[in-house]
Structure formats: C-alpha cells, structure tokens
Image 1: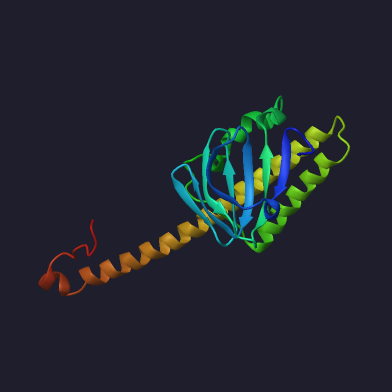
Image 2 (image 1 turned 90 degrees about the vertical axis):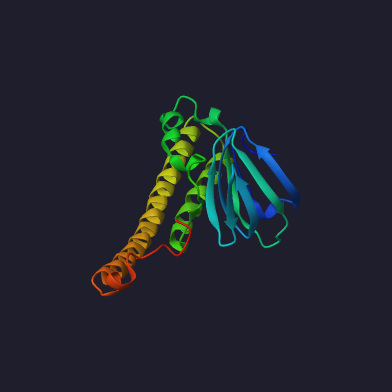
Length: 198
C-alpha cells in the first residue's frame, strides 16, 4: 500500500512479472527504467534497453509487451493531480511538453544526469515517508518542480546534440552537392538523382 494517497514512488525491480497489458491512468507518471521490455506510448514505441526516462499525463494510454526481465531497475513516480491542487505547478505542469504524445522519444540520461534525477526522487520519497506536516506538500512540490526543470534542461540537451548531428549531415550533403556542381559530372551526367524514394 502507498504511504501517501496522492504521491508514491515504486521500485521497478519489485514489480512482479506481468503479461502484456494496456492501461490508462488517472495520474501523472514519471519513470526512469533500465532493462525493461518495449513500451508503446500512444502510438509511439519506446525501447528501454539502455535506461531512459519517460513522462505520462492522466488519461494517456501505455501498453507493455510484458515485464519479465529480472535485471530491470529504476523507479516510477505516481502523482495524482489533486496533490497539485491550489499550487502554481497545477497550471504550469501543462507547459512541460514531454508529458504530451507529441514528444516522440524518451529522455536518455548521462550517468551524471541520472545521479541528479535519482537524488531528487530519493528526496521526494523521504519527504512523503516522513511525518507529514503543513510544509510537506510545499516541499514535495518544490522538488517536483526541480525534477521537471532538470528534465526540461536534459531534453533540450538531447535535442541540441541531435541538431548538431543533423547539421553535420547537412554539411556533408552540401559539400557533396557543391563538388558535384563544380565538377564536369554536371555537364556529362546532368542533375544528381535521388537514390532513394523521394
């Protein structure tokens, strides 16, 4: 049983093997998983072989082939929207685009980034397991905001890295085309043709 009715962190290694399943949850879910079978998030497949993080909003569909790897690890943070009631995060959480189906890839973390994220999650868990007082919700929400801000930062890093790679590919293509057009091949062979289905 969860120690708090509106927020809980589950150790992924302790989840029993389950067959393939599709589910729709009433809460936000933030997960960091390693050694997990493929998951289908909406219509997008995520592969968790190397350990990644993903985010779900309430009423989104998650499907799993089955959970059977004994070496799996990580955690799942479940957060009911009522926990955020009357807080700034209740409105601003919609601004984090990685909770939407439109984000087509999970977040891949470096070892250093994973250490930061795991530290924040441990602190959230310690806070809700302690004796609750009038500051508990405020402290946990502050940590959730920090977790989401770091996640946003790491997503930006991931896309910047990918943009650099894409930019390098475009530079190579531009170089090849420039050589082609500045060569006699243009006169003898004409315009270059696309070798794949364009």
